Length: 88
Image (tube, rainbow, N blue to C red; front, top):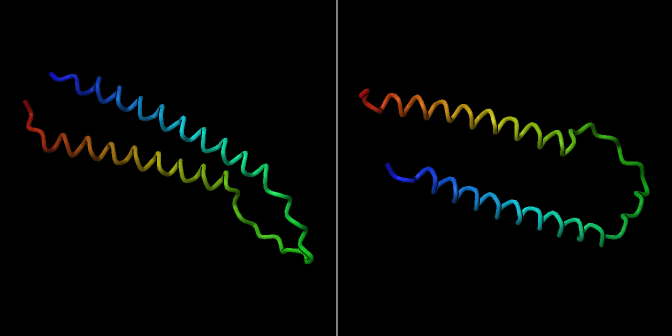
């Protein structure tokens, strides 16, 4: 048997570590950028209130849905592999 799983795990961990570092650097850059933006002037006219979901709510829903979708796809792939693999 090959060491595919070990090598794939190693490469995956390296990728995730690098991605996390890049994401942290990006957030830090955005935080620095936002600090440099002057305060927006007040609107001369009252802006009507709109009942929209928060960005946090939209993000939570999106990732919850993605987790369910990925679990469903894994179950489907497992069933498909079982159907395609002859019993030994």
